Length: 407
Image (tube, rainbow, N blue to C red):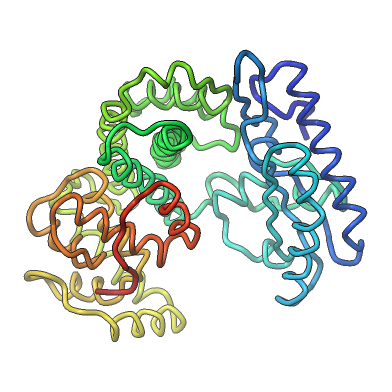
C-alpha cells in the first residue's frame, strides 16, 4: 500500500486522482453484492503509486486510465460476465465525470492462485491498492516472485511491445502524424523501449515491480547498453510526467529509428539468454528458436502434444531446407510463436533472405518488402495477437492484410 497515486504529480492532481479512486470504489462497492467478490484492487500505474500525469497548458491532469481488478469467489463464466457488466455499468458514469477511462478486469481467485508466475501477477502482488474486500488476498500470493516469472512470458511481453514499433512504422509511412495520432506514436515508442529494457533487465537478474526502481537499475546495471539506458530513462520520465510541447518539434521518424536499434540489440540479447545460446546471431535465430519450440512440444506432456499435433496438421512446410528438429518446430509453432519468429524481420529489418522468407510465410504476407511484411504481420496480430487491434488500426488509418493462422 502506498499513500501516493502518481510518481511526479503535485498536490492538486494527487487530490484529483484520489477523488476519482474514492468515487469509483464507493460506486462499485454499492453495485457489487459482497458474495460475488473476494477483493477489488486498483492495479496498474496508480495501484503502484506511479500513475502518470500530463501537463496541459500548465495544468497537471491524470494521464492514465484507472485499472480495476475484481477478484471473484468461485463463479462460472456466465457469472463472471455478469460481474463485468455490473462493474462496467456502475463505473461508466464515474469515468464520464472524471474524464478518464476506467478499465475493469474480472478473474476468479482460484485461477490466480493456481496460475504460473507471470509478470502481471508478480506486479499485482506487490503493486496494488485494495479498494475493498480482503486486504490480505493479494499479499498472500507469496510464490509470485521476480525470479519465478516464466521466461516465455517475458519474451511474449517483449514481442507485444516491439509490435508497437511496427504500428508506428505504418503510421509514419504516411507522413508526419498530427494531434492524437502523433501522441499515440509517442506512447507506442515509450512502451516499446520500456518493454525492451524490462526484458533485458529480467534476463540480467534485475527486474522489479516498481518502475522507479527499474529505472534506477537500468542506469547502473552492468550489461545494459548506454543508449538503451538513456532512452529508457527518458521514456520512464515521460510516462511519469508528460508534456506534448517538447515532442511536437521532435523528428519522430528519427526517434523511432533510434528506438529500433536499441530494441533490436536488446531483443537479440534477451533471446540469446532465454534460448541459452551464447553468440546467437539473427541469421541463426530462426533455427535455434524453432528447435526450442520442438523441444518444448516434446517435453510438454499430452496436452502440449495434442495442441502441437493440431497445429502441425494445419501447417505448411518451412521455406527452404532445414533439419528435422527445425521442421518439427515450424509445424508445432502456434500463431503467436510464428509472430514472435517474424517480429525481428518486420520490426528491425534484420535477417538474410532465408529469414525473410520464413517471416513472410509465418504471417502469410503477400510479399517480402518492408511494407508487405508489416501489413501481413499486423493482419496476423489483429487475428491472433490483440483482438482490439483492428479497431485501433482503423483509428490510426493503418492498412493491414487479413492474417492469422498457420501458413
